[in-house]
Every structure is written in C-alpha cells, then in structure tokens.
Image (tube, rainbow, N blue to C red; front, side, top):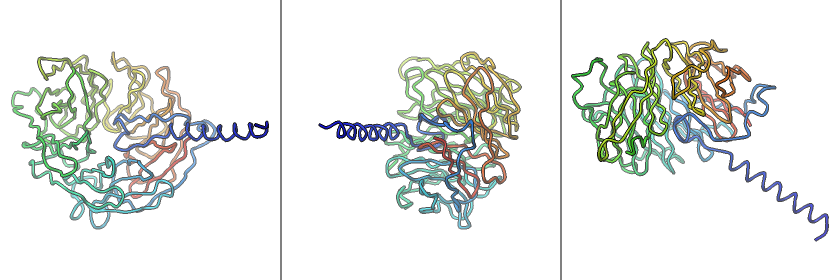
Length: 429
C-alpha cells in the first residue's frame, strides 16, 4: 500500500473512531431524573466552553402547554406534559428541530387543583410511554404517534393526594410492570401490566393509628425508585405518611419511616445507594439517612442512621443528586440555597450558599458538574466538589415565566429547560 493510501486509511479510521466514541458517550434521558432516576447523566466531554461563554441556544419549542413537568429524551424525541385549551396533554417534540410532532389529550378538560398545569414527566419504554395525569390517572401511549393504548383512573383504588396540588409523580417501568402511586386505601402503590394496564398487585398502607406523627394520608409528590437493600428487591417511595418500602414481588409493605413526613407536601424523590436510603422534605421537617438490613426470608429491617433537623438540611423540592458520596441540593423552605452534604455522616461540606438565583432550586449532574436551576430562572453550573462552592458559569435562559420549577434534563450533549409552554434546548458539549 502506498504511503498516501495508508495515510488516507488512517484518517478514515480516525474519523470513524471519533464518531464511535462520540456515539457511545451520548446518552438518553428516558424518564424523570434520567436513566437511573438519580438526576445524573453518564455523558462525558461536556462543558468544554462553559467557562468562557454561555451555552448556545439551539432551539426553543412552543405549544406544549402550561405546567411544571420536566422532559424525557429518547430516540430523537423530547416528551413532556402540559395543559392546553382542550385538557392535559402529552406532547412529542423533534429533538433536532424543536418542532412539535404530536399532542394527545389524557384528560377531559383541565384538571383542577392549585398551581394549575401538568406535573408528570413521561417515562419512555421501548415503543411506549407512560404518564400520570395531575387529576389522577395513568396512561400508556405509543411514542411514535401519540395514540392512546390504555388508561386507568386512580378512582379505581380510591386515589388520594396528601394535599391539593395535583398528582405529580412520573411512573416507573420495571420489567413487565409499570408502577404508580394512587395513594388510596385500596392501592397506595400499584403495579400494572405495562401492556394492558391490568392490576398485578396493589400495596396497602395498613393501620397507622399508633403513629406518633399525625401525617396526611395519600400520595406525595415524589416518584418511585428501586432498591435491593437488605437483599430484597423493593420499591421505595415518599408518600403522605412518610417513606415506605414495598416488596417488589407482591407489594407487601416491608417498612415505613415517618421522620421526614410533614402535613403539607412530601416532595423530593429519595436517594438509594446500596443498603442506604437518604430522604428529605421541606416545610421545616428535615432529612435522614436510613439503613436497610435483611430480616428473615424476604423481609427487611429499617433503622435510622441519623436525622438532620430542618435548620441543617431540608430539601423542599428540586431534588438531590449523590456524587462520590456527597449530596448536592437546594436547602431551605422556599430558598433553595446550594449545599453539599457528606451522605454517610450528614456533615456539611460547604454551604448553604445564597447562589446566583432566588427561590427553590432544582438540580442535575453530568461530567463533573452540577446544574442548579433557580426559581427565578437563572442557571448556575458548578463543579461537583465537596471542597468549595465553585461556580463555573451562571446564565439567564432565553425565556422565563412564573416559577422555574421544572427539573433540568441532560442528553446527547444538550441541556433541556422546560418553562411552561416552551422548552429550551442548549448545546453543552
């Protein structure tokens, strides 16, 4: 082979290898808080220009309706929910252009509750997606066309919210099941056949009359996560009556923790790490680390490792991310002050800081950085380090309306910010 041919072959291979590497590092965000429901993206090679300039706005989508739902991203489409004039809808947007591909109503008229608008982020699974309507229902749709496959009303389980701001969770798909939290006496958490919507099991809370804290019944505002703590597969959820763990095989209640429950709204999705569960709520409640251990056959014992009072740490809403043993989140009841806490000990590494924005803050993590999105719309990118609060860049998105409570999402080298009727897509690679 001639030298020029060798060079050309090497160049072609190099380009191909670069394409493969970039393709591998890209990652979808197929449900609320990402692929693992932990608020983290595994993508690399991001933020290369963030210290020098604001991220580039690629497109702004319009027409998805009002609401506070976040977005999911998979197979070239972005999904969210919103209130349009005919009711609450699910919409699909082209990831490349921002064009709305389809919108499907999942309610008869707009659900009525305080802070009108949608809450649930669609969960993508294969060629289907699943969503909870804020009025109390779960629906399955074809993600290519938006065609409704099946829908179940939470009235079937006497569904109930702990307070009046609408059902807010994003369904969990696990194997052949889809799980949601009607919060009713006949189904606190239910597991349904994901293809048909038929009930597989319904978990009941049981007698709570002996509780030392008189907490509200019903569903909270968090979403279910999977744990194998104590060697038993279980679903962990924060509801009105506290944090619960139910056995995955049959929905049997394994344990319940009331320490972080309040009577207004229990919101943040818990963090699961091995045999540990970290939970927090606002409204002057606090945070706790729990440890799960095996107790007999298919049983689990829960023990409080420590409790942090509200003045030390309370995440009202906006979520928490765990990175290398440290939790990053907003602290305070309505203030969302950035803070970093060592999970194993509960010791404050830094903060709380005032931050560049005001109000509550929602978080996401990718490639060594944590995104803090504040209620007034401002976004700060900080280094994920327990040593100090190290802000790399703060920017104001192109559009802001009402409270910027929708969680940020990261996929395919892009940052997605939902703001009521609009979705903004920023380039961050």
